[in-house]
Every structure is written in structure tokens, then in C-alpha cells.
Length: 167
Image (cartoon, rainbow, N blue to C red; front, side, top):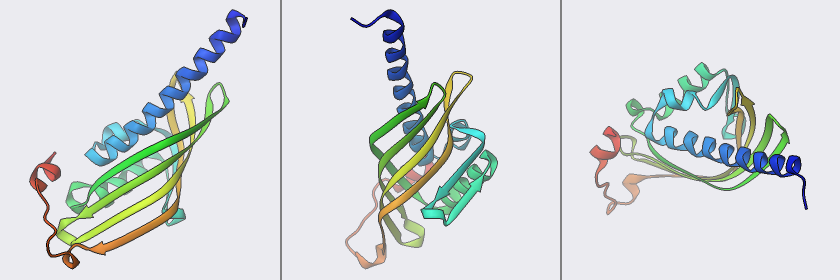
């Protein structure tokens, strides 16, 4: 039978993995709901991101949130739904971890008549700061990225757009 120290370490590892899952889920929820201040709290102050396979690279939480709020904010007209699955989380020390997540993402912009569907794999570096897990680096690699015009599908209707864009 495992000793108490071993059991405590195993329980802590499970708690850390669950906390990292909640962190990433909060990241996607805040991104879709455009809760920029809450999203900023997911990152370390010196965090880095590497979106779209390096097309958009930023360092520091202010630069990251500035980019996201401009490109996906209400004024842009973009509405999104990010779904992350299949977390592969490796605790590399008591205060560091690496995580890989499958992403299904659907974005659309009614004003621009633009739809985007993305499948990708996020790769995150996480760090535990003052007992809370934070994102230190976020990046992803595409499986595919497709775009099309909403005007090409004349039967397409958007229901509850006012509710979705004003939430």
C-alpha cells in the first residue's frame, strides 16, 4: 500500500491537472463572451502567444488582450465558439506543466458575410503562481482552416444575432 506522502502527491497531481483544465476552459469561455479582464487573469504578466502558426505573435498580457479584443471584440462584429477537447496534460514539475488540446472553432461575422471553421491543436505552457495555474505560453497548429462567404449560401439565416452580439 502506498504511504501517505505518495498518496498526497498523487492527489495534488490530480488537483493540478483539474485546475489546468478549468484554466483552459475559462480561457475559451472568456474569449467567446469577450470578457477581456477575466481573460487577462488567465495569463502570466509576461505570457507569450503564437496564434495562426506564428502569423500573430505577442508578448505580455496587455499586448495579447489588445490583439484579441481588437480582432474578436464586439466592434469587429465577430462571433465565435471555441471548443477544446482531449486534454493531454503533463506536469513537468510541481509548478510547471505542458498541455495539448484539440480545438474545434467556428467564427462568423455577419457584417462581413464571413464564416471561418478551424480545427487545430493548442500547445500550452502553464505555470503555478501563488497557488494558481496560469498560461505562460499559448500557441496552436492547424489541422485545417477554411473560410467561405455567407453570401454564397442564400438560405443561411442567423437567428438571435442581436442576443449573441449584445451578450
